[in-house]
Image 1 (cartoon, rainbow, N blue to C red):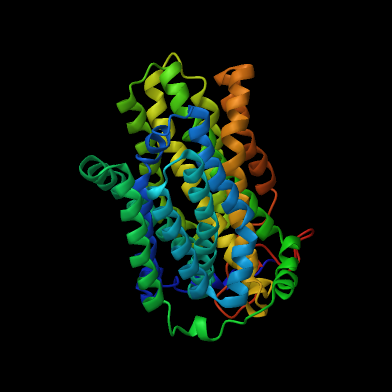
Image 2 (cartoon, rainbow, N blue to C red):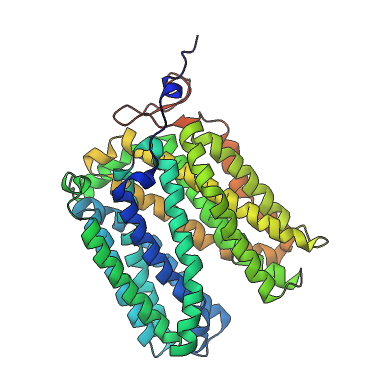
Length: 432
């Protein structure tokens, strides 16, 4: 007879927002996100001002994403060798230099090179900040921490474009890059101050790249970690391809939407994320990771598949964008919990391999970000939008088919071994 789960009678872990160290990390995130949002509405037209094609404009974004992907593991190894604080500060300073260089660019190749260089800094920053969050927050609160961290970035991105438009109007497009670079310098100062002297920084092991890889290698045999990688890939695949790149083209060409309506739909995508993040994070911690991941994948797959089938009901595009955003956001909270659970359970954190593990997870997301726009766009050209959006939903559907067969993983109290919510001796389960 299965014994009752003792965790059911335990009070929930405190909200991560009650942790002063976590709140300070959110301050860094919001500062960076506002700066990033500054250049979002400006960068495409700034690149276009060099008299290049629309395809060439896309190259600016592709090179940035490719560089960040290639430096994903490098960023993680830097974290394990030199620490979270060093990685965050180095990443911010590199992206700041990249932003200044972009603003001073006098040719399109210079702009591409400057933005591409920034991708390396972005990888360092994300690896350092995520690794510090995992080391700061208890496993049983990691779902909420992921949601709150993502919310902070969304808030910053929402505010940034408005400020960027004002700066570009009165001071010129290049000025937005200089303001962004200055904002990153401010964020680096904040990181220097708030990340210093914390216990997690003083006690973190320092390992060589080879030692870091060895410490992280056991994670590849943990289904929680592999599931987290897959969920991260699916989330960025959906956002970068069918939602933010091909979706607006479909809305313009097939639904005859105005630019205002398209912009409103993209905004609703973010609103869908914000609306669900806190509830999903709490559910992932209380009810288990699978209890949130499976429904999120159902919503994501159905919403994306339906987008290409609504030519007779164009109004449906708006609620489907809300649903897609909510599905991706909920999945991200489960993925964040699974990532933290597996890193702690496999001892990667104690042995100095957590940075490498976080870096590989970031690479999984960047891979989805890179592959989706071209792949879904090609399918739309070859088979039409209806086929393309159904195909775009397949990664979520395939992950769903696998996720439903797994235990409902939940985090144990800090200091205990992680186990699935089901009995640890379940046939086929991965021993933590």
